[in-house]
Length: 492
Image 1 (cartoon, one colour):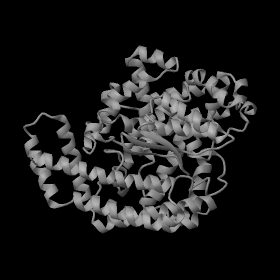
Image 2 (tube, helix red, strand yellow):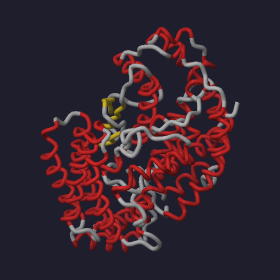
Image 3 (cartoon, rainbow, N blue to C red):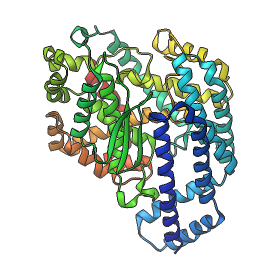
Image 4 (cartoon, rainbow, N blue to C red):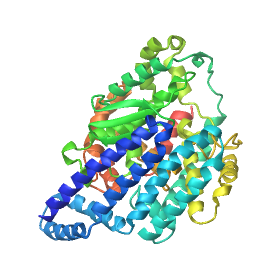
């Protein structure tokens, strides 16, 4: 049957894709500097092979035949697989193999250039690479096609159905709701940091972080934590999911929240149906949903009062200075609102302003309203307008994020969608299951993990992202739950 041929091919290509993902993880964690150029060649080959193998005419014939066969079938998983294969095939066949290979090689080289530029705080070192990746992304978008604006085609890679217009309206409305909360929250007297000023040895941070990640459900027999310049989660498979974080020996919370965030991604990857690995339905549905899982564990769990009532005594065993800190004090410290220049260190209240800045920068880049050479000055101008403070360096400004070096444009807005989805899903879980809500209030989270496994993880891509969230929560996600959560936590 054509469907079986497609499934066999899809599983074979998943093996190749997972091998390429392992090389990508290695580049960020272990690769020596002199290996970058050869790694770029390797990644180009993998991308070219995957593209060539999937875009053969026989694959299109199989999809068409399987769609006819499925008309009489009532298997929802087969229907979802065919929906995704058709979409992937349509988009893939728009691109020549040479473009795919060139893009993969360019991103591998750009990642190394970005890391050096960030270390030197010199955007000019990265600018030629960014120019090439923007040009290549434009070509991708033109070949894929779009109805309204070119940026829509890039956004659609990460969040099906999202458009520049829709995201602009969503983020614009969120901004209007958030700004009064931001003003009031950041005007409050900051908590005293004296009790938190100490030396937090890296090895003790690693041990504490691992204990917390394991307690919320991350399986270390199927995963690990390493160190990278920019924290990320690489899910080669549900049984090989790798987290990274970075360490500051003057602030143990930086690595802890990095681990909680990436463990949220990792729990999603580990919760996908293993027997469907290689089928589209066995994969995560979108980045907006993926990000909801990381923000759920980082913010709704890790910054909660119940979490610190449970974990502060254990943290004090690793870091003795914390014995003098009360749960109320650490709760106030981890939920202080500040106008920070760094997105990954931003509090919940101001975080989405960082995303709005990046969304508008990308939108203008691809609309032709912003030149690459003007990115640093325009970033600094817009940041000062939003946050009321100057950017001190390129490293703390337009070079702080790794995303552009991967050539992933249209990705940043999914962070705000993730925040909205997370608040919506947590509110729904608590409402649907009072026992789960009581458990969370005690600092216990097995029920929350079970709920997300059932409603978000195991379905994979069975439903489109908006439908998945609506089915889980009993209604579509809006920003109301997020803004209400922020008001209740920060306006005290």
